[in-house]
Length: 94
Image (cartoon, rainbow, N blue to C red; front, top):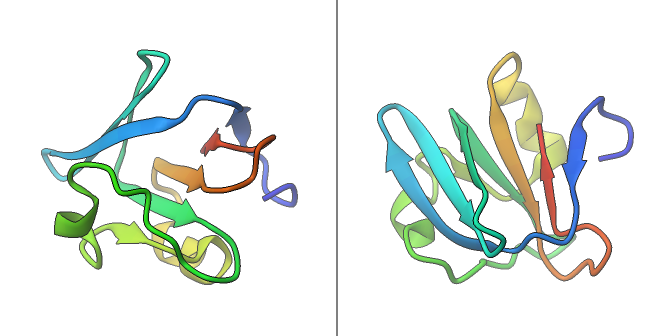
C-alpha cells in the first residue's frame, strides 16, 4: 500500500459495510463513516473476511480481496481499503 498515494486511517476497525446507492458505506468502531464506489479488503496473502454485516452479501459485487491485482479495476474511483490482522495498519482509505 505504501507505493500508492493514499491517506491512512490507522487503528480504526470496521464495524459494518453497507450498500449506498451505487457504492458502499463503511462504519468504524470510532464512529467514522466512509463512502466509496468500491471496497477492497486487503487481508494479506490468504484472503480473510472481516465478519462484519454486509460483507458476504457484496462479495464479488464491489468487495474485493486483492488490493494489488484488483486496484486497476477501480482506477479513478473512491474506494476503501481495509487491512486485517496488521496491528499498525487497520483501516487505510483511498
